[in-house]
Length: 359
Image (cartoon, rainbow, N blue to C red; front, side):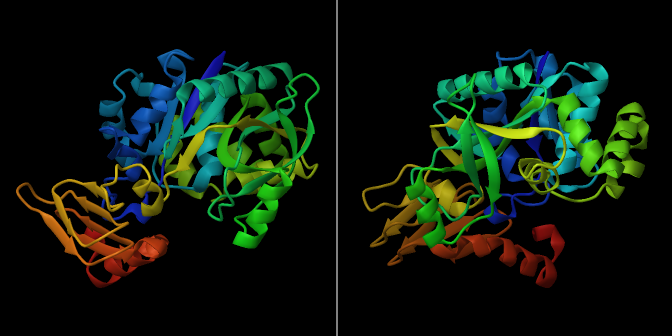
């Protein structure tokens, strides 16, 4: 049967102070009054039964996730006692599903992306399911067709098209986030897609690659699936590593017994990793200011101004350009938009100098 795992871990520190400890970005209502998690669920609702949708998130947030996704069975919420990077957020649910359904084919999606139109995504997801069902050695990922030379994304190098699915391609190489010059070369060549970080595969296939490449992790997640009461004992000891580094890259290089292919996503795709991406999702005024909440802008342009402070307050700015001004009841943060990736660094200083409760 077909299944879905939504990865909803991470703290989203690049969106501080909107996201904070206890309020990760995927649970915030950031787009059209909905959380990123809710949007991720709605993209697949109807494609598989609710009983076949799992969410892997921080254990501290399972109650919030349950409230946001009341359609899901309680046993489908997998709460990580501690974050151990994306490999384990993939491997643990795969082991759980393998125990329930040895023939499971699963789509692993993320809860921090904005994807439109949903209909185009659904068609790509259907094709990815079909490839994984037809080829038990396929690890399928999604390559976003780039519309510009972005430096904030990893890239996939395409090989030959698949014989039975000519829109999809073999992937021969994973590339890290490039410099602008290299990104321009990638896009101009037409050989590269952005790495979406989403996958479709048979659980048996990905677990077999894990057995070959990281046997200790493989043994641990199988034991965890058999003995969920050992979660607090086993999970913190899992090797902390990304699924790309541990599985996808080695397999694309000929290691393991599978092969990597990608289905193209020729859509609007935003990895909501920081304020620059968020600014593009908010309506702007005549001066290019993206504004949310009660705000006033005087002789100011191309800013992101967010007021989520206490009721009855206003955020007013004058004479500024290209800035982020974000106000919440706990904190006020101001940074040039072009340096907004430094917010993660700033959060570390806040925790150190003021206290972790405000980070």
